[in-house]
Image (cartoon, rainbow, N blue to C red; front, side, top):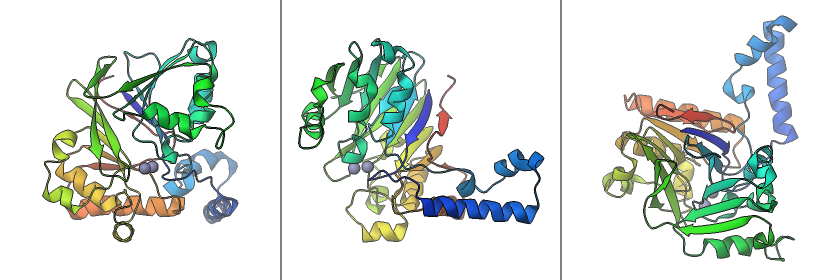
Length: 317
Ligand SMILES: [Zn+2]
Ligand SMILES: [Zn+2]
C-alpha cells in the first residue's frame, strides 16, 4: 500500500499569503548571501534549507489516497479541497474516458472534508462509477444538501457519473485489503479507517479529540490502533490551545504522541494543521512533538509531519 497525503490543513482551506511567502523568500535570500553561494550550488543549497523554508505545508483541506495493488485506481479518503487536484490528475487516465471506478471513504461531512466534491471532474463524466462508503445512514442526503441551489449551481446527483452509496456495518475488502472503521470523539461524530493486510496496518484518524481519559481507559481505542505501522492523526493544536478549546473535537500534538506511544504505533503522522498557524509554527510544533517523545525516552512512534504530496509505503507492496 502507498499512502499519499494530498490535503493536510484543518477546518478551512488556507492558501499561502504574500506576506508569509515573502517572509520565506527573505530568509532564503539572507541565508544565500551569508553562505555566498554561486549558481552551481543552488540545488544543494535548496536541499539543505530548513524544512519550513524548503517546503510548504500546503493549504488544501483533508484528502488522502491509498494505492492498493488489487485496485486499479487509488482509494480516496475524504473529499476536502485537495480532491479537486486529484480529480484533475485522474482525468488523464480511465476517469477521463468514463471508464473509472473509484472507491471513496468519508470520515464525516464537516465542510473541510466534503468541499472538494463539487469540483471533482470525474463525477461529471458519464460512465464513471463512484462508490461512497461511510457508517452514516444518510451520507447521500448530506452530499446532496451541500449542492442544493442555495449553495451551489450544480446538484450533486445531476452530475453524469454513477453514484453508489455503501453503508458500512463492519469490515469490507478492497483489493485484498481489509478496511475497518472505528468511531472517534468529534462534534457530530467521525470515523477512523484502518487498512490491514498481512499483519501491516495503516490508520487514518482525523478529526478526533484524544485526551488523558483515553490513556486512563485504553480499552476504547488501543485494540483498534495497537501496533499499527502508520497512523495519520489529528494534531491540530498545541497542548495549551487544546485545553482552551476543550470539546472542539481536535487533539494536541503532545496527546497524539502520548496516545501513539501507549498504542505502540510505529509511525505517527501529525495532520489537520490549524489554519491560524504559519508553516514555521507547524514545523515548530513538529520539533516539539519529537522532543516530547525523546523526553519520554522512547524510540517509537517515529513522528512525521503531514505536508501535501508526502507518501508512505506500508508493507511489501
Ligand atoms: Zn476537519
Ligand atoms: Zn470535523
